[in-house]
Length: 100
Image (cartoon, rainbow, N blue to C red; front, side, top):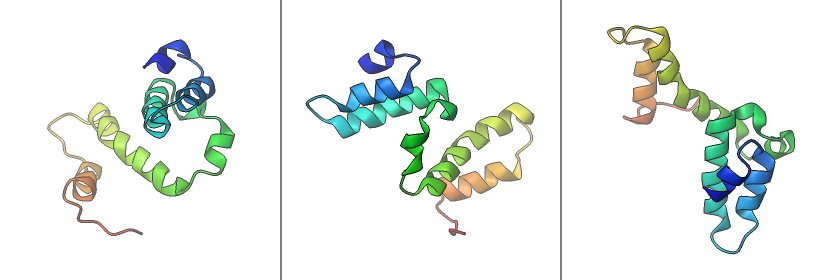
């Protein structure tokens, strides 16, 4: 939280500060990265952080899947269940999906 407040609009500085300390740096960096990502969005992530990201396609897919129910609720009345919502539930709640 300290890094997120100290570097509130600077993804790079905040994440680097969060991992460059004594202690559980990987966990601290993961939490800080999540906070900065939620606050600033994907466009704030430096290109060089993404360039060598392992399993980037999978990370991108999961990120899109995470926000799809929110987008669906914003676009559709609550009484309407979009096909994407059912697919999301099958994938992440019931684990009944296959990798394409």
